[in-house]
Structure formats: C-alpha cells, structure tokens
Image (cartoon, rainbow, N blue to C red):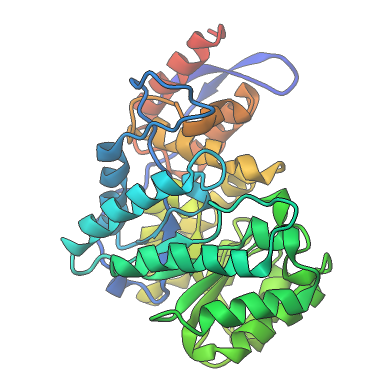
Length: 388
C-alpha cells in the first residue's frame, strides 16, 4: 500500500492510501476470447522534441509501437489511428499515415495480430462550396492508402460530410459509393457528437433514432462489405436496438464506454463485440475478463470488468472529447511512458482534481500495475504543479 496527498473537489488536500490489488498480466491470444475485441490505441508524444505542441505533433515511435505489442500480447486487437490516437485533435493525416504504415509493418511480424486502421476525410477541411464528390475522393484517397498496405478499414465519420450534406440521401450516396468499392468488409464508425461536436446531425438528423434508420439503410445496401459497425453514442438502449436490426453476419462493436461490460456479456437476444478506447487504459482487466467469459466464467468476467466502469465513466465524462487525456494519464501511471505529455498539448485538457479522482478509481479497479510506482508518479506530477 502507498500513501500520498491528493487534491479534492472542495479545494482540500487529503491523504489517500491505495487498496487495490493489481490484475496480473498474462499472455493471451484473440482465440481465447468469445468476442472480437479491439482497443483503440493512443500515441506517445516525444517530450524531447523542440516543437510547438499545439501545432506540430512529435511522436515517440518506439514507445507508441511498443504499446501496440503490449495489446497484442494480451490478445487484444489494435484499432489504429482512431480518435483515441487524437485523430483530428493533434494527429493529422500525414502523421496518421506514418502511424498506420509502422503499425501494419509490425503487425505483419506477428501472424496472430489483429489490426484495423481508421480511414476518413480529415485531410479535407470543411469549407464553403465543399461537394459530396470531394468528400468521396477524400475517402477514396485514405482507403487507397490503407488498402495499398494490406490493411483493413475502419470507416471513420467525416466532419466534411457532416458540414456539406443536405440530408440523409447525401449520406447514403457517399456510403454507397465507398462501400461499393472497398476490397474487404469494413467496420463503420458512427461517432456521436459527444465525442466530436462537429459530427452533430450525422446521418442527416439530430434525432439518433432517425439517424439510425439511415445508417441501417447504408449497411443493408452492402451487407457483404460491412464486417460491423461501432456505435459511440454512450447509450446502451440505442446500441441494443440497432444491434437487433443489423443484417445477419454484421457485428455490433460496442463503442459505449459507459456500459461495455453488460453489452459485451449480452443476453439471450444477443451481444456486442468491442472496439473501445477504454480498453487502452484497462487492457489487462479487459483481457482477463474476456478470457474468463470465453471459459464460461461469467461471474468472474463481471468481477473483473465491472469495477472498471466507474473509472471509464470518469475518463469519458463531458466534455467527452477530452477522454484521451485520461487514457494517456493511465499509461503514464502504469509506467508505459515516462512522462505525461501529449501531442496537441492535450495533457492540459483535464484538471488536477479530475486526474486525482482518476487515480483513486484506477486503484479501486485494480488497474494500477504497481500502486507504489503509480503513487510516486502521481506525487511528481502534483509537485510540478505546486501541490505537495
């Protein structure tokens, strides 16, 4: 057990003593799991680069790729160059290309490695006069890059499309063109406006239920080109309803970082697979829980995973788009990187009180790999900010 001083929400400093028992690491493979499980992985900034963090990303490629190998060692797949990697919030398309190239190269050295890569339109800035054909061409460019390297596609939501689409039919036109030409089935990502305000009204409606109808039409037109859909609306009711309406063979990948445990476990009516940002932060717990579920130990699955839900809800609390700060902070606490710096300067997006509460919740969930070392790292961070 470790003791340290942590700030509270009422402007006090309290003594906190760790109580959690770390979940041990164990090497596993995806075959050990009854669900397909991707972790959307973060990138590690290079703290020694002499750059302007808000303008020019500097990436520690060795640490970034080492983290992906850790996920593969645990049996988890890597969802590459997604919003967890700060796509659109520090990671631009040129850096995303390099990340994808390097990750796919490393994945090829591991025959069992599961990886899929985000392809979108983020190199196309929303602007007056933007056309659907320009959006389609932008999607084609990024898809061509990933497919040219032999990669699978996660079809990301498009800010440019959200900006220029006049209604549901425009979304159907774009997705029909793209899905009609991809080489292998893709995972569609419906990212809600809580994650990215620029995507409000995606699929042509501010009503998620009406938007769902349009999204399902796009999938139903090309079911053979859709492996699944990742829904990130933080609503288990909407996910379950949509899951029941998917064509046979199309997976629901939960993107619900508030309710993932029960959605993955499922019930007699079905279950969700997983493509989650929180799996980056709680990878050992996710791996152990999925292995338990695979061996019929449902009670152990919930015992391992349910304590991580309060932590995830805290990391993904509004403004949800700043969840990446909590994900990277967990990597710092767990010794997976030696600093708490982020591309885009995003380490400043959450308060010290928020990070202190994150520490408490991570301890209680058993996802601090070494509580003594995590406490020492927390002390250094607070001291650097004048809190000791």
